[in-house]
Length: 214
Ligand SMILES: C[C@@]1(CC(=O)O)c2cc3[nH]c(cc4nc(cc5[nH]c(cc(n2)[C@H]1CCC(=O)O)[C@@](C)(CC(=O)O)[C@@H]5CCC(=O)O)C(CC(=O)O)=C4CCC(=O)O)c(CCC(=O)O)c3CC(=O)O
Ligand SMILES: NC(=O)C1=CN([C@@H]2O[C@H](COP(=O)(O)OP(=O)(O)OC[C@H]3O[C@@H](n4cnc5c(N)ncnc54)[C@H](O)[C@@H]3O)[C@@H](O)[C@H]2O)C=CC1
Image (cartoon, helix red, strand yellow):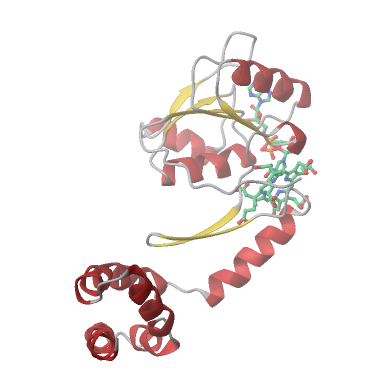
């Protein structure tokens, strides 16, 4: 089954997680990282979820799912350990217009959750079409070593310089060509070594030289 990859903006969107176990805890963490408003419907919570509820970071509805309990949400994740409950809650949520994820039934998911690495605004995700989440996790670990924390500041720098490049190079084609040449390992090596000023100067210098060539 082919998936269409998207990046959802969840800030201030209402999201519901049914179930309060280990899987729910992981999904809640990712929702909160995206600044979503999270409600958890579950009689029991993991200690971490309980702490989030006590701190007001999530809303806890301390009850088992029953028909009619879902309400209106943008996203609903069904993650109880009861397959029948997950299916029933998923059907109700979808009928209410939500995008639905069912932790134990990939075939019932409107969307699946990839393994993810965030470095500032850089987001690297891995999915296996549900074939092997364990492999997605393993690849995420490998990629996290390859793409370390320096990629956060690197992206910030690129974003800042993008405006400058826009001013200096007149056409989108020239800008595209510039960036294809400029994104080499040298700038990253400088950032890794903590030499942000030098990295910035190097890019500005490259823009000037490129500008006079074209
Ligand atoms: C379809 C999907 C739906 C969804 O959850 O969105 C789904 C479904 C299922 N997962 C199952 C099992 C495991 N899931 C993990 C871990 C993760 N699962 C995640 C996503 C997804 N899991 C979606 C597909 C993603 C893709 O396309 O690859 C990750 C990537 C993202 C996240 O959850 O945050 C996160 C790693 C995060 C990270 O570390 O970076 C581990 C590993 C572990 O826990 O150590 C195991 C045990 C080992 C194994 O089975 O592989 C089972 C069987 C349950 C059972 O046997 O009872 C089902 C149901 C089924 O397959 O039928
Ligand atoms: N998609 C994924 O990433 C993964 C999915 N799974 C599947 O996810 C499911 C949950 O796994 P865990 O979190 O480890 O289970 P768990 O046993 O740690 O937690 C289950 C939670 O569901 C709650 N619950 C049970 N009945 C409920 C009801 N009627 N209404 C509301 N809440 C209810 C419990 O109070 C508990 O908080 C399992 O079915 C497992 O097969 C497992 C691993 C990964």
